[in-house]
Length: 206
Image (cartoon, rainbow, N blue to C red):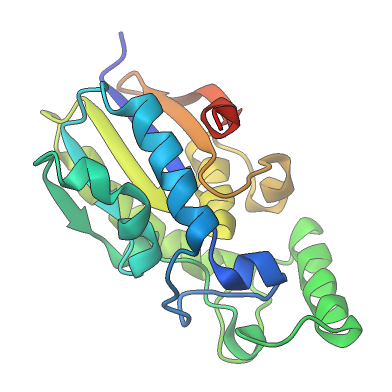
C-alpha cells in the first residue's frame, strides 16, 4: 500500500542553463522566459493534483518554478538540503574546453565510485547525500502528507534518486533530466519505487 507519493521536479530553465554554464548552490539565478513557460506548462498539467505540501530548495529558481501551486494556498517549506550541489570554483565559469574538461573529469571520477572528490570550494556526492538525508527525514516525518511536490536541482536530483532507490551514487547518470522534468516516486512504508521516470510530456503541450 502506497503511503506517500513524491512528485520530484527539476527547476525551469535559467540563462546559465541555456548557456551551458555550471550553476550550483552558490548561484541564486532567476528563471528566464523559457523557464517561466515550462513552469506554466507543468502547472497546467498538474494543477488538479491535490498536493498536501510543497518542498523547495533555498534557491529562488525552485520557488519560481512552482509559484503557481503556492498561489493556490498549498503550504510550502524551504530546505537547504534540497539545494543544488556546490560546484565551488566551477560555478559561473564561461563554458570553455578547459572548464568542460574539468567537469567531465570529475563526473568520470564520480562514475568510478570516487564519491569524496570535489572541486575547490565545492561539495562531493557524499556531502550532498548527508544533507539530503536530513531533508528527507523532515519530509518523511510528516506522515499526514500523502501527495508531496518537491522542486530541486538536476545533479542533486540524480543523487537523491540514486539513494532513494538503493543504488550507489556512482550510478547518477542513469537518471536523465531536463528542466522541469518529473520523476514520481512512491513510498510503501519500506522502500521507494520510481513509478514515473523522466516524464516530460507536459513540456510538449505548446
